Amino acid sequence: MNRSVLVALLGLFAIPFVASICNVGLGDRVPGDFLLDKFRFTASAVYPKQLRIDVDHIANQELQEEITFTRTKGSERCSIVIPDSKDKNRVSHTLFSLGEHREFWATLEVYGFRRGDAVSTNETTSSD
Image (tube, helix red, strand yellow):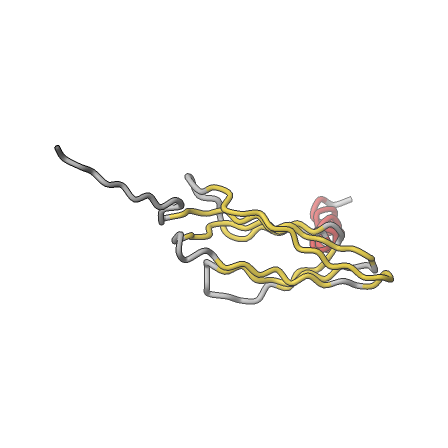
């Protein structure tokens, strides 16, 4: 079999498989960034059906958080709808399970920086 035909066939089979796995990373890890938060979102139903999860997170402005990278992982195969957003400090997307389930969950890991003070202290000095 011709090499280009083999590559084309592999591409045809790989695209739907990759698209159906519920694991997406957005942004770029940057030296010095760290895990700001980790969330778990859950959807459930009494009877099996297609489930939906709306993931939404806004960086903490009081701590001057800056988001550099997010990773969302779902418990089942799913499709993900990611709206076009110019706001780098907000994560918002919707996951739909591809099959019918009674429970569907997703985790969101948020990486970035905190430019503000995480802990406030009041220091006083006295001079004798």
